[in-house]
Image (cartoon, rainbow, N blue to C red; front, side, top):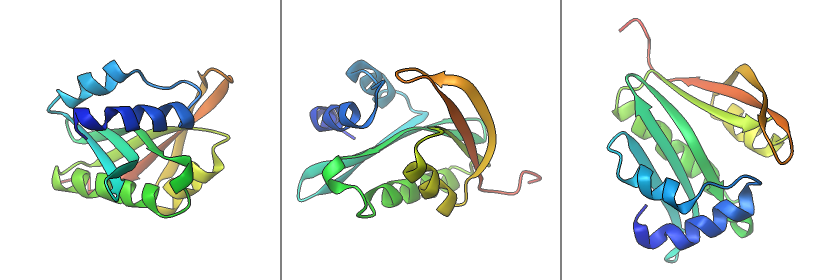
Length: 144
């Protein structure tokens, strides 16, 4: 992700979430060496993006969204696969994320990728108020 991508990223963010991140959040994350922000492009058009950050031997997928016109075409799966590859390259032991309990499509995507439900955050989301499902993907043997 580059600063020039932010207009498209913000358009996708605002159409995807009831509580969208601010542009300043993306800009700040772009400056952090412990964060990785990627875009998926089709014909020069940004059609999706992902944000992951790393701490010690763990990572958190903070944001992943696809333009509504490009959903159900494998864009989210490709972005997620890229995140997992980067986590593996960085020798990350586990990748975590939170997802709305009602977001069946996203939960199914994560389950297909091997994530498991490991907890809940009660009333984590507002607008509307809803629990978050905490999911984890184990990437490497933690005994190493």
